Image (cartoon, rainbow, N blue to C red; front, side):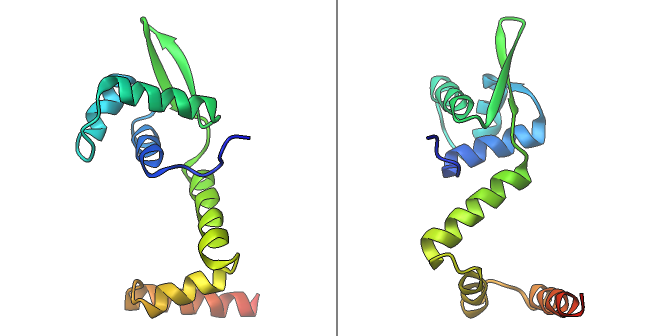
Length: 124
């Protein structure tokens, strides 16, 4: 069974395609060059792996495949977050939030938005 969550490099590739829309290998490689120095064949291999995992589709356009996301950013991020909560926090989303607060990874503005969201949830 294919892994549902994306590796860091796979997520970087998906981010390129979510931003650009359908694109050939060369475009993906060029966009990734800002953070990764990858050979064309490496990018091509990664795109093909993502196709096999069901995360991308490809269409032949003028002798070059164009790759397109098959899953939305929201769905992929949701799967990754569920995996993180399960593996790192024993399935407790509360532990994730508490860790974010305790390690000061949330700005005061974010904490205020979180407080308001909690209040709205209580009232609903």
